Length: 613
Image 1 (cartoon, helix red, strand yellow):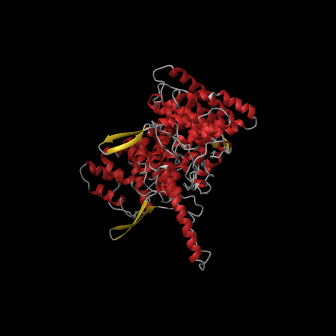
Image 2 (spheres, rainbow, N blue to C red):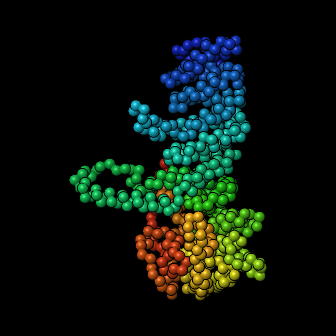
């Protein structure tokens, strides 16, 4: 916010109670070695009960002699920068902003200090209440004026950026350094991330770096909260809540019915797992930002969306793709691609180019194949034509790879040699498991002709033997579907692979151990079911859940069916059994409704695009 319409330099200071001489006289005395008035000014500025009129008076004096406040006076400047200007009257805020603009214009040596002061206020203050020497409360400041405080911080930052063009170069390290520890409260992380994203709007040069910083921090949370751990905690909490509600019905029947409820958990959208709750909050803010940036007045802005896509894909390549076993952060690309088919096709093309690039590390090529398969299987917004176009790229590539290897000396099953090939095979199998019904519906004859034209039998029967290393649940479901439609008979290969899995006894310092030479593929399906409840409200409408196909359960060799609460599983992969087991034990039940509990994003009530910057 530009401070205009006031003659600040010539405005006389208001009369206030104070001690010592003027700032100009004090600086003159300091040059002569007299520090008494200098220390007195610092003491008065540090008064916790300082009044608005006093702050205004001091700031006006400092602005008249700002050119004299060089490096030798940094202690005094640091005291001034700590003045409690936020939350004060509008006159104090305007005076402080004017002082900041004068200071950074005349003394750029204090640029970093001014930036640190502003960024420090991007998160709510902590309130500590003590009894004796014990902290009995340590919570976030839920001041209702928090949005106004953040507005003033951004006004200050915009002023500084306007007067010092090189601000962005000095600001990014400070934003990274001041990022709250990921174990801080959800509220603290939410406010800081929200404010970082607001910075990216009026300093667009920093957007990619800011997105990378935020997504890196979110990945730290994501990998520290495994899917199985979140499911276990949430399931246990749900059981406890059900048991508690039954007890209340038994013992609290005479209580008044209008007892207050915990509104924060009334809709069930709060994650019980603490790390998942923090990640959910940050994901909700990030997805809301992506939507706000890409849409203008409710309609998609193509140019802005393309620019955001380029930044987010760059961050994806740098920090997300190399990260193994992240469960949720990568869904920001899934959500962005749902805005327009062209974005989804561009993302798939990007992954495809990475998969077939021989100069890329094998681990990244395998990750790209895993993302391709999972994206094609789970993206409800992806039409069958696009899925078939991707299969028409992947499957011929597999055939060419087989051609290049079958006659060579490396034509045997080894993941270390053929990792990208096996991952691409699994991506094709996984996609067909989810999409075969859509390919066949409407025109069965034409769909079957297309699937037969893929020549899957050659891939399955080749000497590289992909069925041996693919995830057993994927292998068995794929075998059932392809047998039903007489595309390829996989069970002979599966049984032969099972016979070759002979146990090997080995001796080590820990004693004898029995292992099987499985050489398994390190499986990763990045778009497995989304577990976060609040941000999941945006993912649910565009996500293809697992629907049990009736056709793949016919004419499958019958074995013991595993019993259990199958209705609680979201995916046939959750029912994974040893490779020799039948597909019957791997089918899922209905999709558990993790995502049906609405909750507001809870971010500060300031839209990212509330005002033009």
